Length: 234
Image 1 (cartoon, one colour):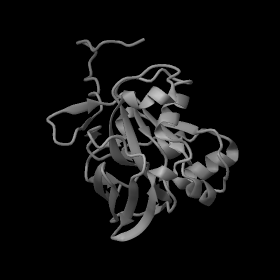
Image 2: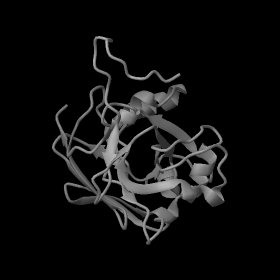
Image 3: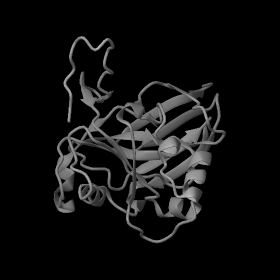
């Protein structure tokens, strides 16, 4: 059930999470944030997995998204990691979407970083518990402005990279995804009715590593955009 905002509650309701669109005076309202784990073969290997396993989905709250250039180091971790990703923004949704028609639902793309409390994730994996505390904390989803799908089409084979303080940490190509964007959308829509405003973080290439306060992070996906932020004391 959705309760419309009303006066008289004694508090101000939180504003709708939204992100900017490149070159437009437009905000894109965020409905949900879905994520795909270990969707690049080399990253899966560095995390101890191999083979083409079914997608591992998890989620972040919509208000985890941030476009601020200052991102605070989160509490309750001593091992914060970066994971640069191609982010898919949906302009329409549905259930049981045919992968052959999935790209018709895409509004645009962005560069995102799935910030991860790696120590909490490792403990959750060992205990067989959810990853919520490791993945879904405040401001854990830095995002570039969205870029609408244009004449160049969809970034099926785009270079992706991340540097920390000028040092190359992550580098890959979206063609190396285990599950392609259309396949991700199709599979995810079997579990959820996807909606306009959904964001999908599509997985990260190898080279994930730690961040500390003072680090300067720069990311780029060719044809999609750039993302830049620095990590501050929490």
